[in-house]
Image 1 (cartoon, rainbow, N blue to C red):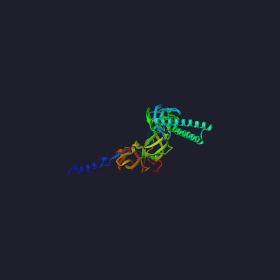
Image 2 (cartoon, helix red, strand yellow):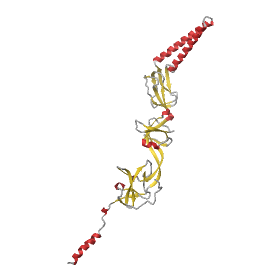
Image 3 (tube, rainbow, N blue to C red):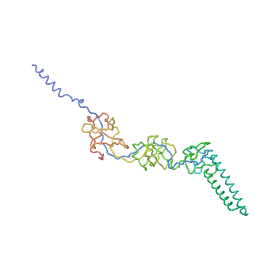
Image 4 (cartoon, rainbow, N blue to C red):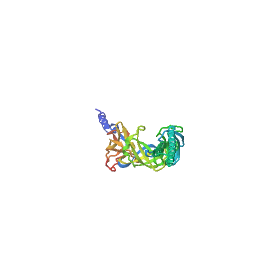
Length: 351
């Protein structure tokens, strides 16, 4: 046999053994990694609302008698001073008639009382006549006072502001006939304006009266400081949110919309890059590096602000790096490659 032919199989075998390894047999993902950090971060609740009057600072002007609005002198949004006219009111014709009858009866009773007293002075009136005249006059006086009190004074009246206020609403209109107790003008104390915000029910447990708030008008303007003055205990049927009132010593304009950032204490968790956290049908997760493999860790985003990332809770290993770039290509156990480990020990350590 030709010696060259005999050596050919051996050469081919050696050539096969020395060929480059096939990287496709065990594919890996190029990643970047950072160490996880256990931090304490401020927790905020963001809400939106408008300026309105608090329930305690609202006053409704009304009359306890039927009548008619002769003239309205204010409009919603007006700033009024104590004693400033709000509207002219005229009691109903029936009440005016009652008052007039009581006044006429009183005048007649007093004239009769005076006549009987003159006769008694001349000895021409019996004692029982004198007693009857005095009683009749007293009854007429009481009836007139009752009628006058029911009317509320004179038939034509001017209703004025009981304190410095902002006109919230004017339910009545000029010429309108109103029933007893009907609201005529609604006032809001100037020092009782609040920003009424709506908060998601899931966030309400983080809030408490007295928490600091930053208020910023949505139409532009300077931010101002405030505090939570009331936290609602039920869902508003109109907004499906929970009402939270924010008070401030700064001047507010009724109806102006605001963004409220409420300081709701602090929360501790793992600070990781935002791109490290991925979402799928089973929820949020990230990957840590174990050797040359990726380990999936289920996490939950926490409502806190941290520089350069997000705050999460979960069973992270503080001694394993977190995949900061390339996580979207990974699955549990996938091979990874890239810069070497950066984690000696993470800050903190408690979960």
